[in-house]
Every structure is written in structure tokens, then in C-alpha cells.
Length: 205
Ligand SMILES: CC/C=C\C/C=C\C[C@@H]1O[C@H]1/C=C/C=C/C=C\C/C=C\CCC(=O)O
Ligand SMILES: N[C@@H](CCC(=O)N[C@@H](CS)C(=O)NCC(=O)O)C(=O)O
Image (cartoon, rainbow, N blue to C red):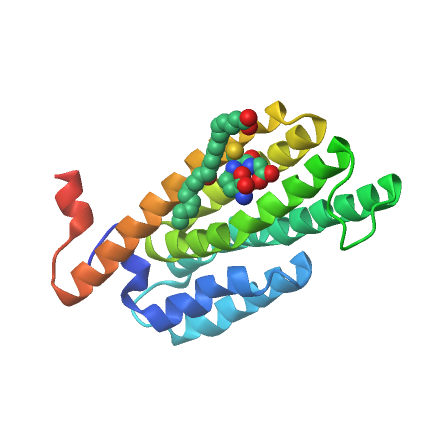
């Protein structure tokens, strides 16, 4: 059995069930999904052979429960906050759809929300890939950093066009790290599975 990042993927079906939950449940409440993850923990623990319950829980569930629920729940809440801000700005400046132009104060808020939405699917897909194929703790930490920088981007852009630049540079950096982690994880998974080549060990050597 391979050790290191991606080890948990040796049973892809099980790992999708385990980690996929952290992304599939974002619309449910935090409490419900945490309970859900914990109860599936109990169910799956019984099905696992050859691992003690304590090490199994530590390995497979602590990080998803602590980081996974927070990372998947912050994202839709942040998106909801952004579009509520646009609704508020439309009312404030009297700009009804389908109009999208108006005073710069309105246009900046509108663009901050649209720009964030453009990147959101890329971000979620990369977060999922990096968490599943590379390292879930690292992916969760990067996910939280990304959400924080997107919040700073929105607030900066709302204030002035130039105030968006530092956070967009930062969030772009985080996205590139996620891209690298996802690509490495995918390479490692497929090459070790089908060719028997351990890319991560090769890089580390
Ligand atoms: C799958 C690939 C997806 C994403 C790749 C990652 C990032 C792509 C970059 O996010 C884009 C970031 C662009 C950042 C631009 C920052 C500043 C532009 C410079 C000056 C603008 C001057 C001005 O506003 O007047
Ligand atoms: N849709 C974006 C794609 C590129 C991008 O994300 N640009 C960053 C840095 S210039 C941005 O803040 N764009 C402002 C915006 O989308 O309103 C654009 O039109 O600019």
C-alpha cells in the first residue's frame, strides 16, 4: 500500500463517499451535516477491515468534520452575501434588471459579485480535486484562505477599483497552489494506480 498523500484514494468509491460529503452537503445546516458525517463514520467504520476505530476516525473524519464542514458551508454563505449586496445596491441606486450600468459605486459592487461568481466553479472543482487527490487538510486551509481573500476582494472593490488588486493577486496565488496540488494529486493517483510510478516519491527524492 502506498503511503503519503493520496493514500486514502486506494479505495476510490469509499473516499468519494467520505470526502464527497463535505462538498455535497453545503446546502444543509452545519449541525445536520456534521451529525450526518459522524453517523456515516460509524457505519463505515464497521465496514472497514484491518484498521482500529480510533486510527480510522482520526485518518478519515477529523479533518472533514472540522475543516470540511466549515469550508463547504462558508462558500455558499459568502456567495449569498455577495448577491444580497447587489440586490441592496440595485435598490439603493434605483437600477432595475436588466440594467447593469449606473454610478461607479453600483458597477463596482455588481462587478465584484460577477467576478467572484466567474471563479467560483473553478475554485470548487479545484478544492474538490486537491482535497480528494492530494491532501484534504491542505485543500481545506487553502479553501478558507481563498474565501477570505474573495471577501477582501469584494470589500476592496466596493470601496475602490484599486483596492481590489491586492486581494485578487492573493486569491490568484491560492488558486495556482490549488491547481498544482490537484494536478500533482491526480498524476500521483493515476500513475501509481495504472503504471506503478510514485510521482510524489520521485519529486521528494
Ligand atoms: C483554470 C485556471 C483558472 C484560473 C487561473 C488562475 C488565475 C487566473 C488569474 O486570476 C486571474 C487574475 C488576474 C489578476 C489580475 C490582476 C491585476 C491586473 C493588473 C492591472 C489592472 C489595472 C487596472 O485595474 O486598471
Ligand atoms: N472577468 C474578469 C476576468 C479577469 C479578472 O478576473 N480580472 C480581475 C483583475 S483585472 C478583476 O478584478 N476584474 C474586474 C472585474 O471583473 O470587474 C475581467 O473582466 O476582468
